Image 1: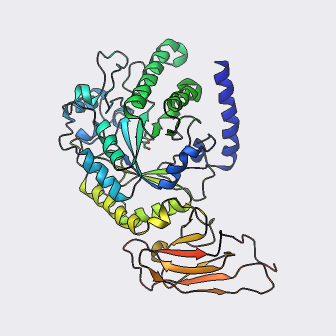
Image 2: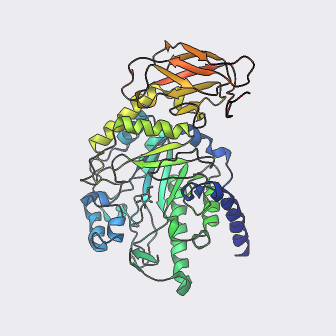
Image 3: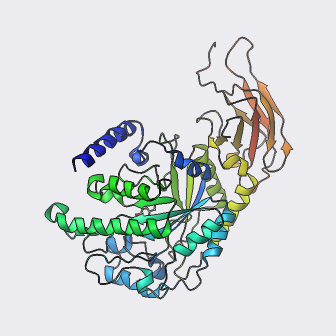
Length: 453
Ligand code: GLC
């Protein structure tokens, strides 16, 4: 106990220093960066999948009963309608690969406690496991075959796992305005839940071997209550290469802002914006107003320009079919990411805000600068404070060479001139053109206030 407390204090100090300079949302990932995160930081695009019994009637995932839109019992009845009758994990994995995503994260268990993998553990007062294997007409583990198909295509496998389990009689939280008990009044009951929780994490580690763990719901308890260091240690003991998202009360590897796009480059070494295509995570019939392809690509370029990943969510129906509008979005991503791959994968955050009026990325050695012509920039685009010679500029994916000129360079001043690059008078890509600028060496920037020197 004592040692756990001191570990925790150590990380609290660490997180506090982040907290001073970051909004709380981004202060979530507090572990020092590990080399194991490299694939993740190079990946840029992941696909999030919220699939569960909530897609039977198309109600809000878990939150619908928690917030009392319908009774818990009625919500749970949906399990008898979860068929996975059209589920084709190979087709899912193909679609994800075609989108240009390098990893997928799927719900192995949401806050409703229903496992989509083959758990053998019985929650609280239950006599059998609460899973789609045991209790739904699907009668099978739907995660393992999906991971197998992802792996065949060299895609990384992420397991979303909710720490919150509102259906477990041993878990304190239940409905928005009622809980079962307080931990301090019944620590033994909480311990029972923790052993169950730990047991499921162990099962997932053994059966599914996720490359990435995507915890959720840590906000209901402290690191000490969750025994977060123990969870982290358990995962890394089994697989030292596994990476863990930031929703483990300070014991994760990267930050997970949700729906909200950062304006400044987050200070956390790695981060991932998770976002819905429409407004909901899981399938809901009313959720048909999707973000446009233009807006999604603009968001994606903005995210990678600030060194992050986009984890774009889809919500399949109970039968395993993916809504056609979401398939179309993934295909659209494929078209754009394929053409602009060089400006995306393996790049680093681009120029700090202010040098260019759109997102930018840099090659890993920072000798190539990629300009994302946001909002259909045409004519001539400007770069400020670039202290490199430009060797060449081209419209990426087309081979078209672009002219550039440097204006306003004063011979006796250290301040670089303004670079203007002539881009086509009409955008050539349906969503966003990208310009590749080859520099004479690693990027050098002037960040001053102008004036005499
Ligand atoms: C949330 C919600 C949830 C969703 C998730 C995705 O905080 O609780 O329903 O699964 O985030 O990021």
